[in-house]
Image 1: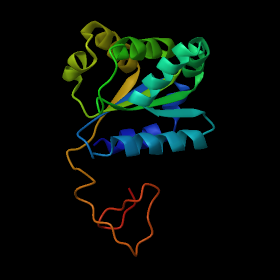
Image 2 (image 1 turned 90 degrees about the vertical axis):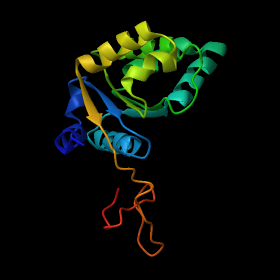
Image 3 (image 1 turned 120 degrees about the vertical axis):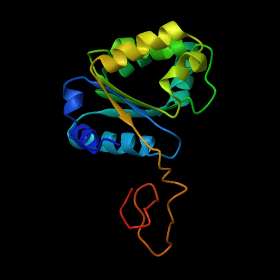
Image 4 (image 1 turned 135 degrees about the horizontal axis):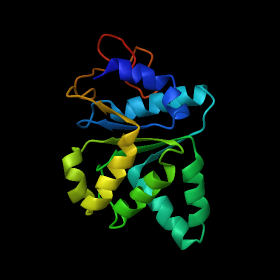
Length: 181
């Protein structure tokens, strides 16, 4: 893992530059944890941050479409300085997922920062989302001014022992050497 990139992202400067990020790696490698920690650091720098798991974000958009508030919801998503979209590929997504995600990324491109995490290799995204052209366009915009962080291969969940006597970090996990995760 590129530690200097993690520390650079934690300064929040990438949000001011409207850059994106993509965290890729196997389950349990720390992608979501790092994305949330960077989100917290960005909040401390004075920026607004919205965190959503991919399936939740898409469910909210579908609901907004049904209740007639889609335009307002998209405008909000377009303007929040940092949008963290977590766990792309963790759950089965609706048929419209590629179009919806592309629209969000296109609206935010060079206007706001988007950080996306996935446990799926980029090569699988076309099949996962069912639209290779939309995935290519989305990645083109996300990574044009973006950073890629490859996480893993260590799985922090299976290689971590918790002690009931130790104080717990925010996510309830510590490495065996006592360092907070």
